[in-house]
Length: 502
Image (cartoon, rainbow, N blue to C red; front, side):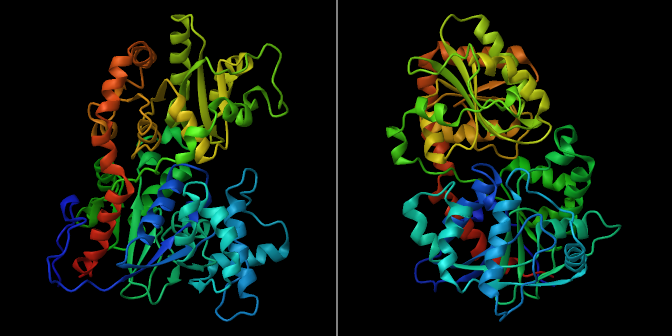
């Protein structure tokens, strides 16, 4: 039996001694299923991971197109005459499945029902190379353009890509919702490892390692913030059903702790590699934030049919100051607390202060939209959706304060990105933010509206304090820049032989 030594943060990125022969290139297949899902969060993480891995000479990289919700996709088989069209259909459904109103799971015809049943019962799913390179421009637009810079496009598209008809939904259904796991097999022969962007319990060929990116255990720790009890049940089952020797790559020490709470047997193979922050877009300085607000403001809080500015709406203007918050509309992000805290701040100031919320549609959002409604109508709250990265950076750079009073996070991207622009951040006093920010942010109690309001007021009223935060920011940012994080991924992959299994 091979003794496995746990990887630690200090092992990652370890350089080889002079004169040592370089290790063989790691043949890595990377699951891109979540890369089509919006601008931030897990989608941003996997795009940046792929870009970092593409820059490593020690990695032979292949991106895997994997559909999300569809059960009735055509079967992908090697050497099929419709191969290019079938692999393109996977990319199409990756995009459509994340589009609002497109997550249809149940079939509408007998043919689709038969396809669905066949896909659910199938055990083996092929990995088919994308040999038609004419599809790469669409692949860039769907999977990478929301985060990566245009100058990275050539390097990304120079990598290999493959597709499978194994959908994320079929993995969940066959594992989490059955009385016992009925694992499917991904025929990933020829690779040393498969990196999944979330827990994906599938069988891999002998000798192919399973690497799992782990973000948090929020569905279990904060069940009142997720969509339903099935999400809670599925989360724990998916983790436990992954391969016994799977390597879990957690995005913070706190997410590692939460993983071990779900499954203590993962301790020896659980490592921490933080998320990387997206580099600053150089063109953001030339973008007018007021024009961005005008372009992307939505009045969805006033009702689905309201698309124009209501009477009495106070339009944004260059002299106004604003507090910025960026996330998805979901209970965990505590937008209710933020809005109520903003009302308290407004009551104590005479200046033209706005709250700009950049938040795409989420779940259980009705209460937040109702809380927003009177302020959206007056223009005090400006709700934006679908803001591209360069324009989001322009908003961050011009904000007087960035507020992020979330109840729980595995990592929390947005405030670190705002910090790159010298914008002072008001964040929840939770362990992961203490680990990330140290003494470079204003900490508040997310359960206390008065505390959130006081934190925002302190930042707005004390520019010297904000300047002190900005002066100390580089020590924080340097830990999360892509060059730093890429070395940690390189160290992990070079240490894979330590984890060859029992």
